Amino acid sequence: MENRYRLLYELFHSITSTLDTEKSLNLIIDAAVNITGATNGSLILIDWEKEVLNIKVSRGFVSHIGDVRLRVGEGVTGWVAKTGTPLLVSDVSKEPRYVEVNPDIRSELAVPLILEDRVIGVVNVDSTRVNGFTEEDLDLLTLLSRQAARVIQNGMLYNTTRRKVEELSTLIQLNKTIASTFSLDKILKEIVYRTALLMDSQSCSVLLLSETGNELVLKARYDENNEPHSEQLYPLDSEILKTCFQAKQSLILSGINDTSQFPFQEISGTDFQSMIAVPLIAREEAIGIIVIFKSQAYKFQEDERRLLETFADLCAIAIENARMYERMLTLEEQIRHAERLAAVGELAAGIAHEIRNPLTIVKMLLDAGGTLTEKDRSVIREEIHRMNQIITYLLDYTRSQETSREICDVNKNLENSLLLLSREIDKRNIRIHKEMASGLPPVYANPVQLQQVFLNLLLNAIDAIESHGKIKVSTGEVNSGVEIVIQDNGPGISPEIKKKLFVPFTTSKSKGLGLGLSIVKRIIEAHDGMIQIQSSRSKGTRVKLWLPSGTESQEHPTEKEMVKEN
Image (cartoon, rainbow, N blue to C red; front, side, top):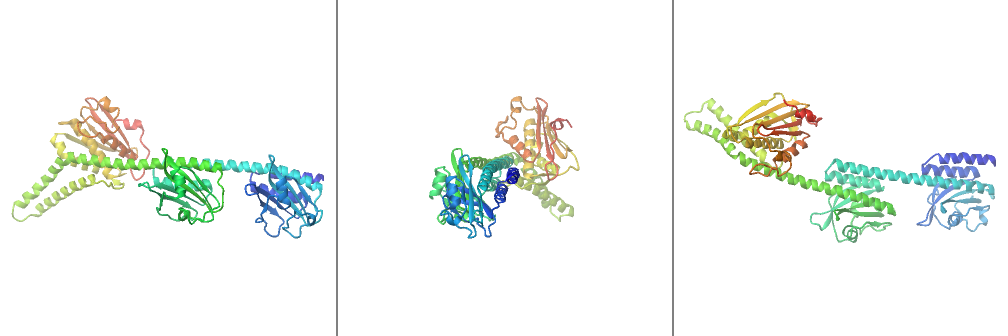
């Protein structure tokens, strides 16, 4: 007897040394079989909702008995589960409650697992001998069951805590994604993946309200097979969509036998038996739904529903922010295009002059009569090329569909901008002093946006000077990048305007929208660059730009380095 208690103590130590529930259950049933000398044994947990006994682990059975289902109250084990009372059956042939699983069994011992006055399971052992178990075995198994219940409780608490940590980690990861991108497509893909992970589901879909407001559109889907999807439409006339979307209520369905009538059958990616749909609500308006599918009958718990609703609220904010960002970019592009067209109006006279001069030369050569010499032909070719360049620059600048980034020569881009402004510069008798460093590294930029920056800044300098002034344009290599400085000797910027230089609609001009510098700043920062403006009354204005060289963003120069005079 003493040896068996010592063995039981050692088994207690082994059982309590792990928080892995599955490992704990296996250690418990091994202990039960060993200390009682049983032929076989099983550990059963009770599903009180369905009132069935689920065999979690077993030992000694020739055939697998995991699929055996007894109801609470059925058989010896079911009676112990129902009453919470241990039962020792010395001869099963004389026990009317016995349900035969193995014809060789002659005796049985079943002890309840009780946790906080609630039966959560049963430890059951069998023997092929009549009177295979004693009262001492009953006492030992009762002691084991008490300890086992605590171990199972610890395992359940551990699993719950681990799941909460996983849920929190998923929420944090989604929040990181939201903070790192405004791409609606990326956000939607992250949402369906993280939600499926969070809810341990086989498939997840996000449907958003269409522009017409009459149907939902499938925007993103995740399933285990990673099958592609198309943007299917779902009219808002089904009961499911009326409940979830229009009434803004979560909808849970479990144990679905026939899914043919459900609107989501083709997007589930699986033969589902359970689903939960949660509305996406932003600014108190439903903008879509998240739908989770499970292939088995599953009852979503209240805490799972609340978690998914919290998750959906976060997702709705992310989706709405991404949409607002996309609308802002569209509006910004329209403003940029309007600014370019406005600049073209100011450039028109200069462009006409630049084209008229070569045309006059070509006309004079052609009207001179006689045979054109090779020198004449060369001059004509050069002048035609010059006109073609001017027209090309103008067309590139005014097009609304901006090109993608490419390798750009800053000096060449500045020269092109000065060429387009040459008529206005000459008209106002403004002197241009150029100090452009040779051998500058290229920058990876959008050439149209870069020219827009230079033209805006040069036009500002020309307007500030009015006439008989000086503009200095210089470039150089600084801190793994290119520095561009445009400086005028105009009257400078007033303190009132200087405080809000980059605020849209701020201007001291009698004409113009005051959007130039705000657009310049956004373009430079979008290229991972920096802009700084220094100005004082009667001393002029100095604009310094810095752009990273090469094809990747470089480390920014410090503010001190930007302020430092050349």
